[in-house]
Amino acid sequence: MEARSRADLESAYQTALSVGAEALIPVSSRLTTLERANIIAFADRHRLMLASGWGPWAREGALLSYGPDLDEITRRSAAYVDKILRGASPADIPVEQPTRFQLVLNAKSARALGLTIPERLRALADEVIE
Image (cartoon, rainbow, N blue to C red; front, top):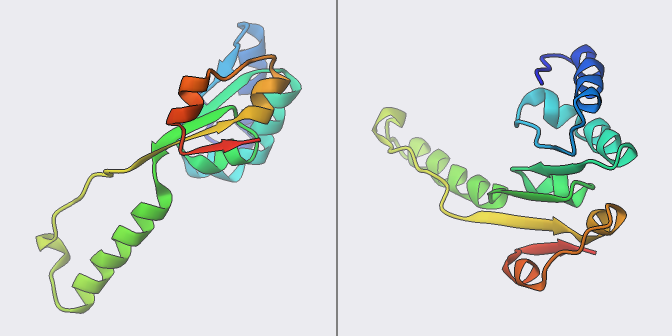
């Protein structure tokens, strides 16, 4: 479902419900970041599994998140700034891909959905929210 503005979210929610969606995976955007609490509340109200690519989602109530480690990205960004301040041309600095990914599981959300997180998956997680 497409939502380009806050006003589009209600229509997207209704479409999700009308087609019998059981899970949501919001695409990362400024809108979904700003509306994260709203999207999480909608998923909670309708007992939908919610997964995302960023840790804060799971920390705030989504079932899980798996994606680049935002703290690592921030640290690497500081190294870029340092190079530029020391005179390097931004055009000469290679683009780096994330190398560290984070799996965050929300056990509280899993219980609310009647799900059990397998122990093997818990062991692989970087963080488990109880």
